[in-house]
Length: 75
Image 1 (cartoon, rainbow, N blue to C red):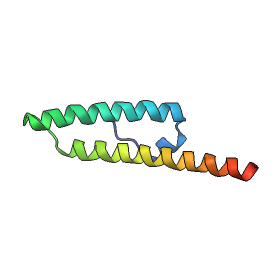
Image 2 (spheres, rainbow, N blue to C red):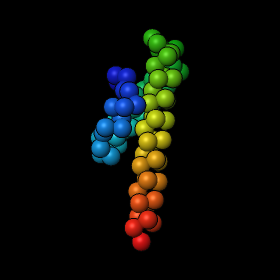
Image 3 (cartoon, rainbow, N blue to C red):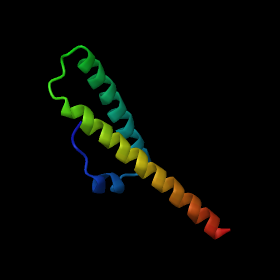
Image 4 (tube, one colour):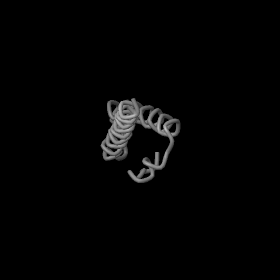
């Protein structure tokens, strides 16, 4: 998985974010398995992947709060 900048994540649709999130979670799972088997080439990939997942989850949370805020304003 390539490094994704936060600005690139902001430009993605909700569906695209969901796809990237699933890919990142799958990659993290595979990396954890490799780490357990002591075959992990670059341990920094674990950290990068965790950060990507956290960024996506934070962005999704912000978007949902923003939508809720807009809905309550319009009532």
